[in-house]
Length: 188
Image (cartoon, rainbow, N blue to C red):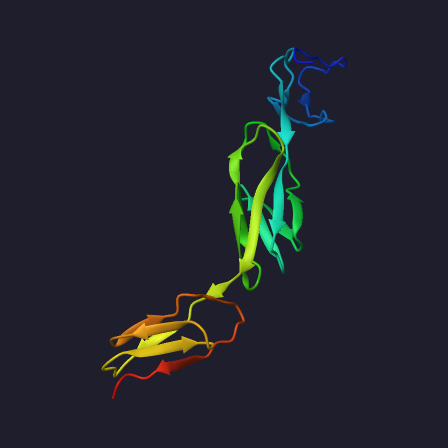
């Protein structure tokens, strides 16, 4: 229970002492303050503060590789499969947490939702969603007088009416092939 405590064994004047927690109460973490010194009189200023602990975790979806998450800029967690995850070290009630992607999987981009807050209970609703990394395809038109229509992979088209840069609006997934062709030549 909360309140004063004292050890039954006495120590001689001039002897050093160290007080530590030998067993944590279930679901709590305890810290000792003023826990060491040299006895010159009765010592009554040792403080033990305990707090409830909570875990932080959530669910990963869309992962096809290896992903590394990090909490509060310190502890890292490596995931290689979709499903639930929980960081190993619980945090004290009232502590803030921030979960970020430390290392993206090859060819994918993962984003975190609900990755920050203040602990009042176990956190299980952080979402990590991974999707294929995508890139746009574009280039430059030069020597144009008129209108040219370009096509990518036999589908999407872009119309250029002047010299300069063009980009197809739809991005392609990492590793996708592409072929840009002239669909309609400019007059003349």
